[in-house]
Image (tube, rainbow, N blue to C red; front, side, top):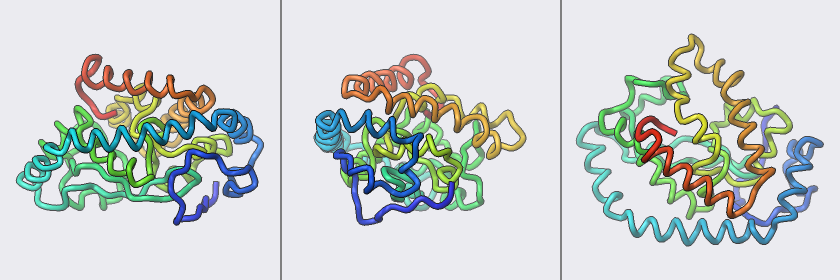
Length: 248
C-alpha cells in the first residue's frame, strides 16, 4: 500500500460517505462488501457515535480524580510530559496524535522501536502498573470526545504499519479507531510474543498484524451495537478477571 491520504480537517463521522467520496485506495473490490454491510446499518452507526460521546463525557467526570492524581505520580518517578503523544491512523486514513498516560521514560520512544516488548526497559515502575490494568488508556476518552476514536474499533496503528495493509485491511478504516476490540483481547499477550523473536518488527508485520486484522475485519462484518457492548464487557473480563496483568 502507498500513502493513504485523507482530508485532515475531517473528524469522525458515523454516517458513511458515498462510495465515490472514500479515499481512492479504499475504493477497491476487497473493501466494497464491508462498505455495503455498514451502509445497511446507518442508524446503528449514528447511535454508536452518540453513545461514544455521552459515555466518554460521563467517564471523564467520573475519572476526574484520576486525571488529577496520575500526572503527579508520573512526573515524580520520571520527569517529562504527562501524556505520550504519537501519530496514529483513524477513519478514512486520517492521522491524529493519540493520548496515553506516559508509561515510559521521557523520549525513550524516539529511539526508533515502535513496539513495546515484555519487560521493556523503557517502561517505568508506575508505567508497568498502568499498562497492567490499561489505566494508561483512560486518557483516550479525550480522543473519543475530540472525534478521533470510538470505544470499540480497530486499535489505531502508526502510519508505518498502515502502509503495510493489504487492500482488504483498508476496510478497517471505514470506522474510527477504537480503544478496544476483539483483536485487543485475543492478543493481550502480544508484548510477550514479540519478546521471544529476533526481529520483532518483522514478526509483527508478517505474523501478528494479519491475524489481528482477521479479527478486526470480522468485527466490521458482524458490526452491531450489541456486539460492541459484548466486546467492552469481554475487555473488562480480560483485564480484571482472566488476566489482571499485561497490556492489551
